[in-house]
Image (cartoon, rainbow, N blue to C red; front, side, top):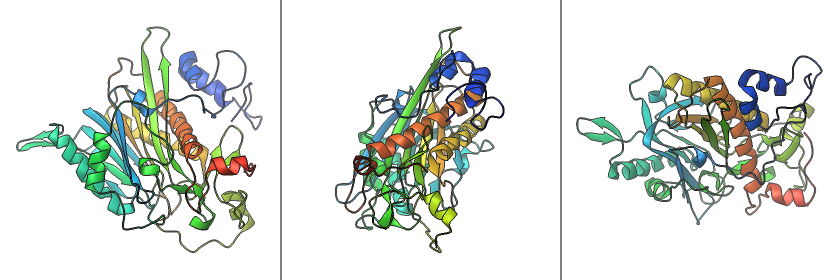
Length: 383
């Protein structure tokens, strides 16, 4: 990330810092980690900045994590409904109810989004989410009753432990019962329980991924109004997780002996003999939410821009083996609705922070070390 000044890191044109300040004003710029005077943008290392998607008014999060093997599911609930959007960038997605988020289609609001492990089997957990919401009288009104609208996306974690154990309807229901507006668990929780990263050569040289969350609140100094944009991301990528402020690999492809990180891109540039297929090995999924007022087209744009946060922190991303999917939710609880570009930019920042929190909060499982373990051994290195 650029450290400030009037030129970019390549010495040409305005810096990202200057563009943010010029485009969105001091309030938004400060929320993104900058200051209103010359100086450096705050880096993405937010170990002490414990924010969450649940900072967004109208959003609750619940996890169900299996004890029998590392897998689980995470539900993001908007009981009063939220305008939804989605953007799918990976080539191996597993999703549910994404077509209805098209602005051309009838349904205007969704009531929950499910993120699940278990590959396509994990979509079954959405049935439990629907059951829970139906019992509470939440859903799209029809002549025969209310039908909860629950889009979902899954990641592949069947290679960790017993693949016959995967999230089902009971798990989805349990996640809903656990949902609250408190800070949710991160790391090895819910959809992040079996997540791994750095899988260019399979699980044997991978590291532990996980689930992370972050939020940014900005205030308009002219009218005192505020809005919040938050993200929750389950990080299960083929690529490495990068800290964009330093270029350091936080978690990713390990060396053959497993004691250091070699860098996925470095292996690609060397022309290492890559596997013919990694089908179904990965996928990063998540939700961006805001209390701003958006329509479906705008929510889709926010979801699209939020993928920039993945591009900043995962390398490579959106591969043939990833089904990277981000949903956007707008609860409309804030009275301030600025340009959608601002909300999309904040969404990308929140996603980037959530990705890094996911691997920093993760803990090792048998055979797969976490970023914390390799950091202690001094194995982290720049890409």
